[in-house]
View (cartoon, rainbow, N blue to C red):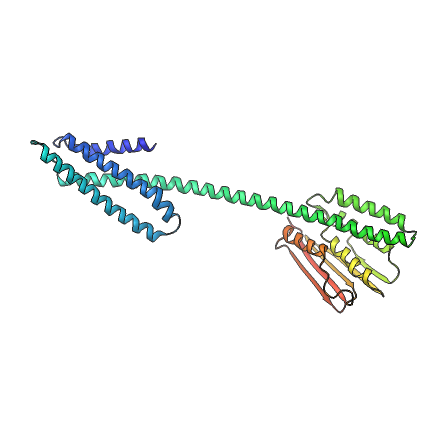
Amino acid sequence: MQLFYWLLAALVLFMVFSNKQNDLSIRLMVVAVITTMSFLLTQLINRYLIPKYFFEGRLFLFFYFLLFAFVVSVWINTMCIVVILWHVATNTIDGSFPDKTDLILLLSGSYIIILFATIVHFVRESHRRTLERDRMNSLKTETELRLKDARLQLLQGQLHPHFLFNMLNNLYGLWMEKSDATPDVILKLSALLDYMLYRCDQEKVALNDEVTFLRNFIELETIRHDQRLKIETVLPAQTDDLKISPLILFTFVENAFKHGANKTSGISFIKIHLAVAGPQLQFRLENSFDHLTSVNVPKGIGLNNVQERLSLLYPRRHHLVIDQADDIFTVQLTIDLNE
């Protein structure tokens, strides 16, 4: 395409410089020199100045070097034409030389050709860069989504063995106590594991199912605690067709039993309140704990896990406050469940 363009440009310049009175050899040599110089100047602009300076936002340097290249090209063209005319004049007796107007017209035409070639290249390169930028942005977005999905799967995978580890410890404690509740605990544990392993692999689950899972877990924990633990729960009976990421709330509930009831020697309590107002879920949990056995706010695998999952699944759509005061551990979580 470039070869065709510059051959056509040379033909146009030759037709512009077509005064029959001028010597043919002069016309051919002048057009060849000016076409070659135009080609080199165009390559300099398109291959170097535009990508290195214009597209990089260095406009002052771009226009400075462009003006410099223009002046140098005019000087080179002029010197070449002078050399050609001098050579023809010294070797030809009856030569007819072009006048000043013809040469100015020829030079002007060459810079119009350069301008057109530069504009075409600029438009094509801008379009190519736009497509490339869009492709890279799309690839970046896809990569981020894949990483996010892989990270969530890793966090979900951490949660399952974490839960199983805690429940096996509880089950072992019941067995050591020869508790009659052990068979019932095993059945409920089986149901919980069935939910976690086969239904929680989905990105979203019905909020009703998640509430049922929480209710079963609380009943399971109630079996293995005596009357010293006071449990107060308010869970909605129906939550319409709302969906939620699985096991988001469960970690807080499990944490209340593990770090509160299990480590408190006297009377302890757990209060769980879950409400749904439109698409907004409001969750509040309070549990007592012994400051002698829990110097700092518990920050195990579970809480770190759920905080990271919330930031990935509900960015700018959740508000989480975890607080510890007067031997009471409090969690307040609000999630906008709108997709």
